[in-house]
Image (cartoon, rainbow, N blue to C red):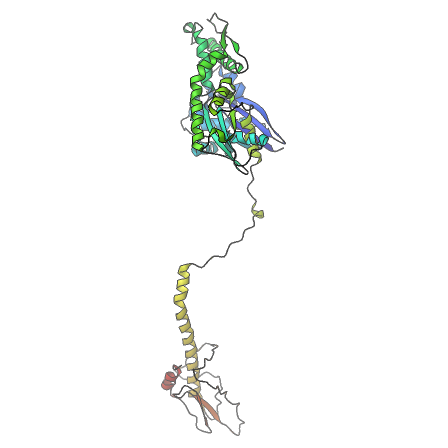
Amino acid sequence: MHYQIGLDLGSTRTATATCREVPRLESVTPTVVFANPDGSLVIGEEAERRASADPSRVARRFLRRVGDPTPLRLGGAALSADVLTARFVTTLLAPHNGQVAVAHPATWGPHRLESLREAGLSDVLFVPAPQAAVVAHDERARLQPGSVVAVYDLGGGGFEAAVVRKLADSCVLAGRPEEAEVGGLDFDEAVFAHVAESLEWDSLDTENPVVLAAVADLRRACTAAKEQLSSDTEVRIPVAVPGISAREVRLTRAELEEMIRPALAETTAALVRALQNAGVTADDLAAVLLVGGSARIPLVTQEVSALLGRSVTPASEGMVAVGAALSARVREPAPEVATVMWSRPPMPAAPALQRKRKKLTPYITAAVLAAMVGGGLAMNTYFAGNASPDTPTSTTTPPTTEETTTVAPVTTTYVAPPEPQKTVAPPPPPPPTKRATTTTTWPSSSAPSVTKSASVPVSVPSSKASTKAGTP
């Protein structure tokens, strides 16, 4: 069964949503790739588990390197970030069947998208993440055409702010998006640093694989504690590292907020710049969407609400992935050739051809007239030279003289001279006992005259006939 699939391609996590009758979030997978010795790749949670045994074969946060041809070393394999991303997406989509749309950072340019297409994602529809978020919001809220929405996207690997405008049948970015080098990974590192200060960290054996695996577990515990503080005001972070006597570290929400407040100031400044780029103010916004895992931190809601002077709430998890799936649903297929009705409009004559036709018209007319006159002259000469008492003038036998002129049959039209003319048709041949010859000659006057002779034919010399024939 074919349906639509949407991916929110994140630096730390990738959400997958489907759209059959209604869209829904299917899964959230860590954006991690592990390379096996045989060259095969493992992604997600399985890659995280194998990474602790051989950290040299794991790749994280490789989305930041998309478009960079420098390969990444995973064990004995060297793969570019483009290939890693394409194979990660392909593996993630293996259980699904349908049209795919991938949401990506709005700051990505054509170079990065084209590099992903060349790496194997040529059939994927790419959608900017803020645009996908507004598509999902519009499915539920039914925005009016012309509405503008601000998107505050604080993910694990970075932050970007954008303004999206709702059109009649689509959503588009308004103005240039802004970004900041701040993300959830920075908050995780701040929590880990706070825990390390409470422990005898300098006494650890960093070459011991068991110690390294325990430190990796502690980092994951710090991340979970950060997320738990979005709903609780205090957490206990478990510590199970060889050589460390402490078994837990206490952390409050107030301590976390004090750590991350300077970084959040950079995100709100980027949001202000995005609004200025779009030429809108906070009063013009129909909605403000807080997306990304780290956007659910309560301090983020407080800072953005204070900045815009309005109440805002975090969006539901997987909103961008759902919007990508909806974007894949409304994507129109290319029209079939058989259904395209097209007719060529009349092509106007080129000016150069028109000029040539105007110039050639007098020459064509002169050539036709010359052919008419030449044909009449040849017939006149023939009749004058072959008329006799015993031969009717209407004979059509060609002359046998040496100066015979071959004339192709030409249909001519007689043009009357200025004065009234009378055309006298030759009389029918007389009976054999009374032979008469009628010869038509052209005197010097403009009107033709008819001379009748009973026995002696009247002929016109060829030179004179030529001269007269040329007279109109």
